[in-house]
Image (cartoon, rainbow, N blue to C red; front, side, top):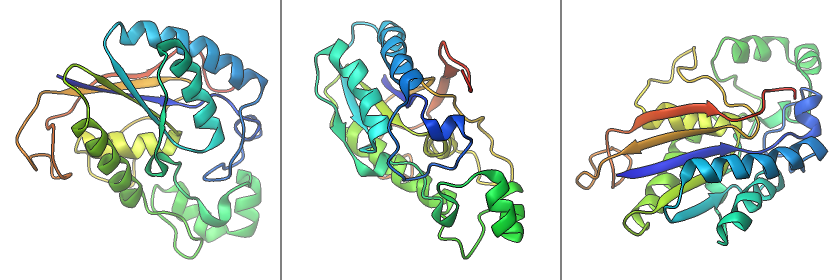
Length: 219
């Protein structure tokens, strides 16, 4: 059985200010540091005594969160840029009100669940492709009986779960977004090469837990 845990980073000042983060490299704030520390203890207990490989987005908010659980496991995290947050182009660093004022038509497209053109936003299917390709690569290299922990970002995790669970990319997200320092767990049994359509490795991913943790958005 292959188990992959997705853990979102702790809170940042941009989260509190409701600003689009994207690939801007924002650190954890004081609350986020405590979320990572306490959340790592809870997540570590949920994972249990099995061996664990930790892979993370290199963005500092994710890297700091990954190191919190890595210290408990006495392992070194691997940083893979494919686990970075979705790029939101010209919307990055802005609030909803600022986006509406500057790009009303593009915002309306985005708010409807579609990908606006002309603002350099990374399409959701492309985010899903790079995330799932990275999961496939890392799970293929795991020793038998080892779990994979992916420390990443809200939008990126949503797209990864959408593809792994074989939901179509439509105007409504089939998977609810994940809160700061919450995690989701997917698992599957081994299968033949290429069965997933994502290159190789496991197939028939099942969602076993979603958005689990001790904190809620805004706390």
